Image (cartoon, rainbow, N blue to C red; front, side):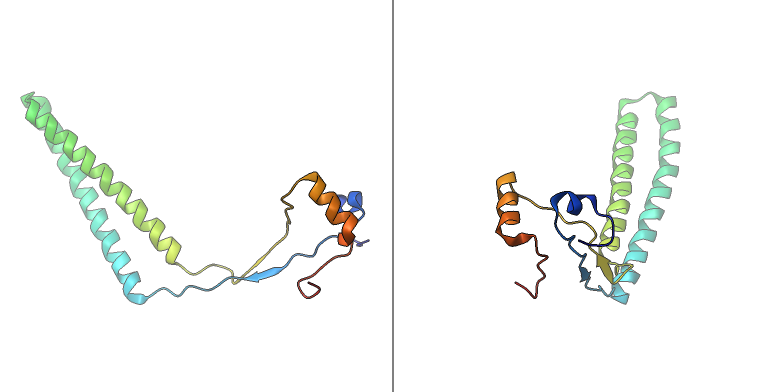
Amino acid sequence: MAKHKDPISQALDVAPMEGEVVPVEKKEVNPEMETDFKYARENLYNIIERGTDALNGIVDLAQQSQHPRSFEVVADLVRTLSTANKDLLDLQKKMKDLQPEESKNQKVTNNLFVGSTKDLTDLLEGGARKVKTHKDG
């Protein structure tokens, strides 16, 4: 029995499984991709800012004229600005996916058994009370 307190392994009268360190592949970011990301991001910021300024003017014009076409233009511009904002967030998410991981290793601290109660009982009765490692097979 292990010296540290693990209520599950104590209840099942088995030795607790040790966590396994799994190396995570480090992703290198291409400098050209970083430059393209910054350029695209800056362009999207400019589009959103100019679009917002234009929207304010068009809304005033539409309210003064009360012409249906001007309100249609306002709706189209709102839709375009909404799409530009979504594009900015998508760009951020895509770039985050390409960034290298903060840590090189992740430690597995929890194990999960997927199966029925019968499967678990068979494992325990079949000698699974001994801790098996990948080397043991």
